[in-house]
Length: 349
Image (cartoon, rainbow, N blue to C red):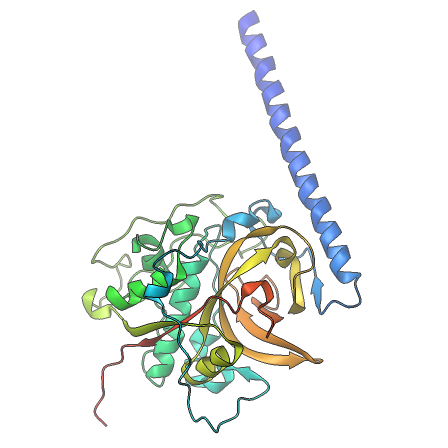
């Protein structure tokens, strides 16, 4: 009996210690959030507004976990060589404001989509698959308006990296070129061959079921959606060419002609609290590399920006979107921009 009571006391002490640590960690995160938000919103020179109302897994404690872009390696430029855009008529001036969603309404279901990567560092896969989906739709004049599978890329591209623990955007595009990718929509969408299977975080604050999910097991040569009737191999889509863009003008020109591009950039703590406006770094430590989709560009009260789609659900930012300073390589967002041309079978007129 005495031994049992002693063990019970030890258990209670351990539990109390765990709770105390959790409270201290939560308090530290809250204090940091308050400091950053007040600093951003209290500076009249800032072009953006911060808020603590956004949905981020773990209230920010696991923010670094969402940063899934691995540093460039020796294959980066081999897989995606730098290219000067060949976009369109050289006499055609680029507009001051551009939004791919307006230019290609036949692909609006894809271009307006905001993804939710959940508590998984799969941004590299989610944004790559989304950009390829957009470009395939645009290249086919809306004939192929299908979500391509971030699930397959995250699970099966072993050369890319480590699934939910990060991957290489360049290797993702090389995977499209060499192996192809099947269709696959959002979580429980029933869309395509291999839909995303990780529970989304955007259903409300702290709703992620798994705080540290692993990438699902690769499903080789078969669809995970049992209701999808198309043959796996017939469902594969490829790109012919893959390339990097490194100047503001080349990025704009390529986007204007072919559609959205994928970009990787460094994320700092203050970005977690972005609510609206044109973001530029203000405060906080570097959290890691993140990949997103650039949809267009514009000018807001004299400030040039890129219009981007994030993958943290519509509960974050400007309904899932954000704008970031353009033209000065803010957070290195113009340093690692990728695109590719879909392989589109010729159709008889």
